[in-house]
Image (cartoon, rainbow, N blue to C red):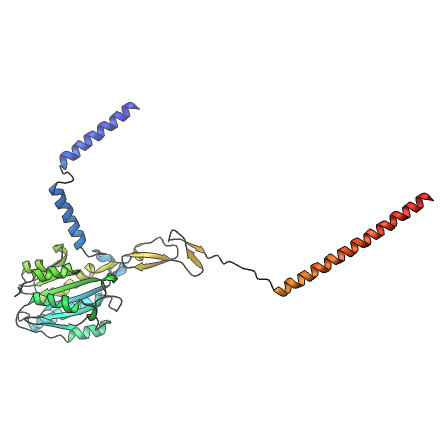
Length: 340
């Protein structure tokens, strides 16, 4: 027994020495802190409920509720035919979303030298009306004031009067910027302010788009929030990519342990019971609802019972008296016969 114990301790000591030699990091080591910060930033920046499995997209994936604002560049560098491709991309994106007042709300901000809000989050809650509004968008031409467009989106599109849900609802706010050029104004500070307010920013660059500017605008991790396509002719291919990115896993479809009914609740689920059952303390199983039966007697029946009881007691008393009288007579008769 002692030999086995000493062997175990020796192995543990050798293993510890090997680990320390291979990974020489202490709790306060700057490399460890940096690694943890990097991992945390990746986790915080990544959209929740993401799936990247195309095989499961159609059957087990649905877009999470969003307040989504498209910010599209229609400056002079975007030719009319190319701008039509952008509108097709927007329409295809709408088709992939669960659009509705309680689902995903969509707004479009169009910009060049000036900024125009084409429609707000509160304007359209069904896909046909939304796609008609997209088809009516016209390019503005002239310059590329991307920073002004982002600021306008934050101050005018992502507001409750414009249809954005209150912060207490925990509805994700997402901006998708599509541009093909270099911004003619500053984007770093306005983008940082937008991200700090809780808006997740995706930057889509086309053709001559400035990659550094895209990275300054986008949320982290940049690998998940910055996209580039060579021409507007292939921008619609990003639809499937965004479907994966904005897709939410259906917790009930992925598997649950509810005995009766599973109810989706954003990232999680809860259990319910069928009629006539109650949920047990484990919040998973159900038990038959117990019905407490309270018997209320008819007061008339009670009175009749009391009368019957009194009559019965009187009859018993009369019989007892007669029995005592008969017994007395028999006893006197026996005494008379004995003396004779």
